[in-house]
Image (cartoon, rainbow, N blue to C red; front, side, top):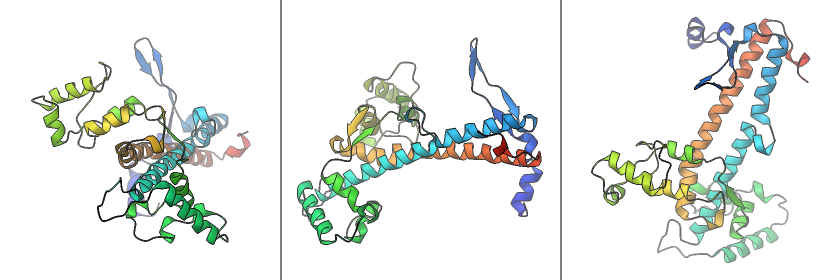
Length: 288
């Protein structure tokens, strides 16, 4: 590196290949968990190639039971989009961001308008590439990324079902709670510790689960909306609060976690390639 930052990192040993380590899966031995590790510089070409291939699987695997992180990211982004589309339909119906000056348009009527638009513009072959901003400019900016084809699906309630599988109870509760003023009054405890205990009981959470207070967390009402969400639920059947909480908070937090996983697996691949290059190894010779 020629930059000042690069020189500083090198001096700190950040890019020293001798510091690059592969950590194996944790396993339980007795009442403790142990994890083996090995430096990349001490690995054989076959071991380096095996680690590189494992990173590739963790990034790109298309097995539904063990999806690679890029495929999970695509799934999460689609879920966020579907929540947003359903909220746009409710905006047209004037049930979301209600405004007495705005005339509501029901799903069926909006669907007819969109089909008429498509019929009158039959030269457009792919409406998934036409953003809603191309046909109207009076919508809130939060809907700018929605395309016309998806909006039509939303009108017909065929966005499909949200799959909650990845949003486990542990993931949701780890986000923490931050009570609104109304919730502080509703949960009659004199202190936040007492309110947390009351909230935990009301949410029917396991006794061993630790629920903590966090300024970055969900409100009690939002956490309840997430916990009572079925494993699979049609977007059109969700409450507006569930859609907003998923779109604005929970799925975005999960996306950040997946982004972090992608960064770490790609970092390991870069390290393996650097070590292989220094040792004069062509990884392609050892990867099936």
